[in-house]
Image (cartoon, rainbow, N blue to C red; front, side):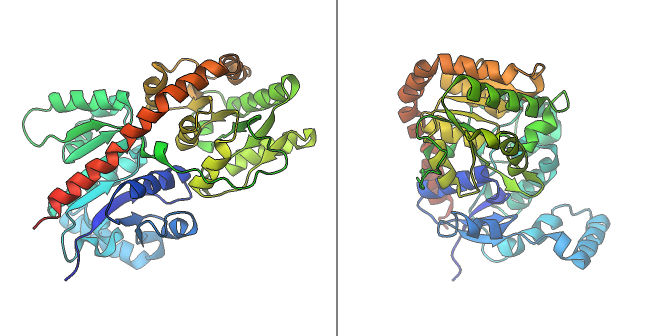
Length: 400
């Protein structure tokens, strides 16, 4: 008899090491070995997830043109939007109904191009009787003014917010929604705060505990208000560190998708400063390996949320170059506010903005390290509650 499966879905692939870090961390927390439905399953076998879960790659329409035409015609004829999800998720909707399916992408609701797939997958699972859980999410409060988003969120059995801005907005949404299903809503830190760090040998120009880790992404460049201001700020910051300190600089990628690759702006910065001998460009690695490098930095300046989580969780003073609620919410929960800890990329006006933010962090190094040292043990303990909630739901729903 086929066993019931715990499903994780809406995972975009481990080429985004934040996605990898969430799945890795949750798999280490829970008792059941889940089935991971992945948009890029080949990435997951390449990095750290191969032994942690059963990886099933989604079927992609770009690889099956005839199927795309047939499903599109069927959808138009019968109005069955969920048929695309059933096709992509292959055999998940055949055989035994999964008792529990976990929407695993922490910030998927931050991106308009993800909202329709999130809604359809949630509806498809609910239609066959599978309970759904939204795990480790960040959601812009303004998004909850859209009625179809509220209807989608109310279908979940449980929602776990990873920071308090999202949590408060979701609680308000549930209170104002009237009758009908209301999800249980919890506030637990991002599971990746508990991710293990794997320490590989340091490259030559990486000075342990005297290196500034730097991460930049094409995504923050896309959100800047003034063209080119992001990279100009990073260049000014690196030059300032070289001129005014004896610290080394490590350029660290955290997403390596061809369409959204940190290595492109990172390599541009490396080429500009390589002649100084003060800069090292790190290669790609697993989420655990990258955390191992970040953990041995003295400071970290980062754009990718999970790169900054790797720094926070190893007590490295961090300045986030952010663009959304996730950066603000996490900083607020750690420090009581986001001022000095998050620099919204949309607010960059002067070429010195990032440098000024970094020098504040340098001047308050011991204070910031002390705060992280104080809060991090209990913060990680609360992050583990996510795994306990998954285990509780699985035990409840797997029963006949």
